[in-house]
Length: 204
Image 1 (cartoon, rainbow, N blue to C red):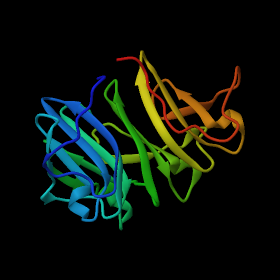
Image 2: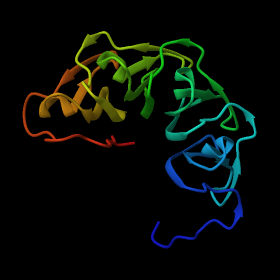
Image 3: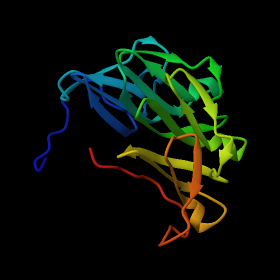
Image 4: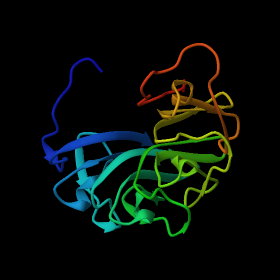
């Protein structure tokens, strides 16, 4: 982790990479490439990468990816709303969501914990800025508690608690928490971001 080497084999993003995750002996990375297939890439060794060539991919950019319960889920910006959340059972062939809800604009963060997926992003309604799913393929907009008034950027799970960051109408609303991923609460004590939060992580 102290000395780094540029990849010299296979594919790479022509513009930028946004997020990467590892599980089940495979790396998956999402980003922005000159071809839509190149917005999701995978590698079995971390040094030689392959652009997806099967199924779907983001037409604009991939912004986050995570693995849980034998499934990969990625969120990003696609030409269709359903394409803003995608899933894969192997990390190489991807499928656009086709049931339930999805972000009308783009998804920016996704995480898995305690049998549930949670994604955050930008939707036409504030409730839609946080979504959840029990299988990664069919998503539901939050309808209880609080949600980001503008956009959600990051989410993670650890020790029975979900935490999400983004842009809310008040500084308190820039950090939210939930015990089940479906009903969210704005922070109300301590400090918070005056503008917006961009990322969050919990302990492994």
